[in-house]
Picture 1 (cartoon, rainbow, N blue to C red):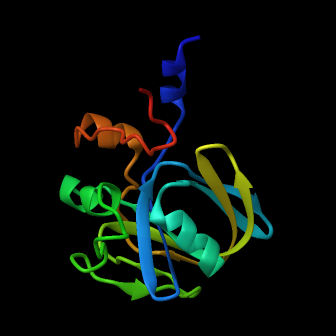
Picture 2 (cartoon, helix red, strand yellow; picture 1 turned 30 degrees about the vertical axis):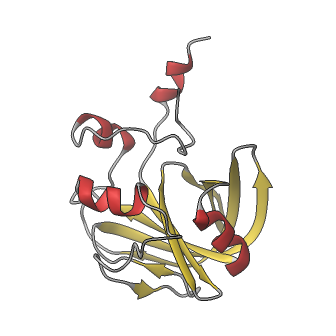
Picture 3 (cartoon, rainbow, N blue to C red; picture 1 turned 120 degrees about the horizontal axis):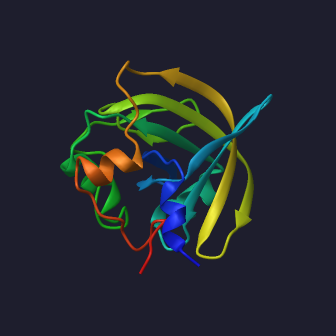
Length: 167
């Protein structure tokens, strides 16, 4: 089997965030997709080991922001390569609150989806969080940052907790 065939699948980069019991958490994911139009529902995949997975479960809500091409590696590293357990990811890039009470950074995003958690599916290393979109906003006219752009232009690496990681 040629697992590199999976690299041909189209991905974007997103920050998924939530807040529960006084803890704010967020992480970069590359697996988020719309699954229905009516009602509008999306799915995000978050590694079970990420603090964000536990906070989403406790909050019963999450917000997805679509990272745009103005983002640089320090921004992606801020949300993608640090732990919410020991680092406030929202301090450097600002923090606003979505319609479902989730924190999000308003910088380097072209869209926002605030979701009420309706189901969770255990997919092995990751949890698939299915949310009903209760608020959606276009935040800029910038292009969404694709995973291909991240790898080819920004020269980013795939971290071990990413759903597309290959050892």
